[in-house]
Length: 240
Image (cartoon, rainbow, N blue to C red; front, side, top):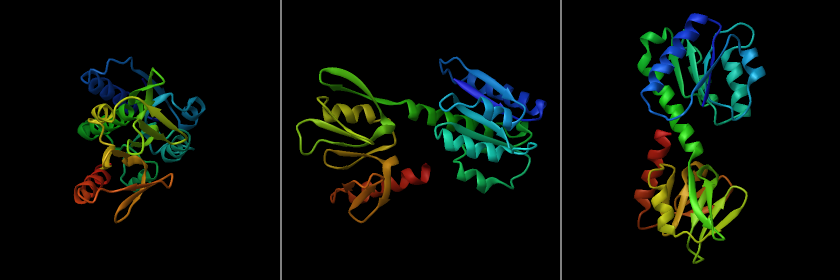
């Protein structure tokens, strides 16, 4: 796992790295962790490659290109790369929401260790979600399907479970309940109707009786469980 630290103050960069090492050492990640430090946003962007960094710790106030400007470029190229801002001022907090920042931590970090740790943990949780898969059998072969690619899972009109992905559908002989069992610990998935489970990340809008997905598919909401389903979705929105 690669983590970038971008700060033109060497002492602040070292403090960020030391806190990261201390916090991640107690997480038992079973991953090799590589830290890469950069003294400017320009140099960092020269080395940046989509998919390379798990997350980046960015100082906002730097000469020439600011951390906020660098974050916008990172977000445009790699939406899975977590971004943690470091700053001496709360002036740019609202701008941080534009790039879906994981945290906005004031310096000196030694006085805000808990906030920094929470931001790091949030990046790690996003990384786990991005890497999670559903293992299903397709034509007799066990296939890992990235959960992020699943829009909804349908087992209504066919005796087989159908995975509706962003660009295609996959028919699997894996049972519907087995699929649900694998998804039990993933907060993104909600059974909104009998034998119909939706990825709440893919919901564009909630209407009176349906969910409208980003791909314009319509997901009916169970009349019997309408209040429960809607509350589950609203809770998900509030927390994510």
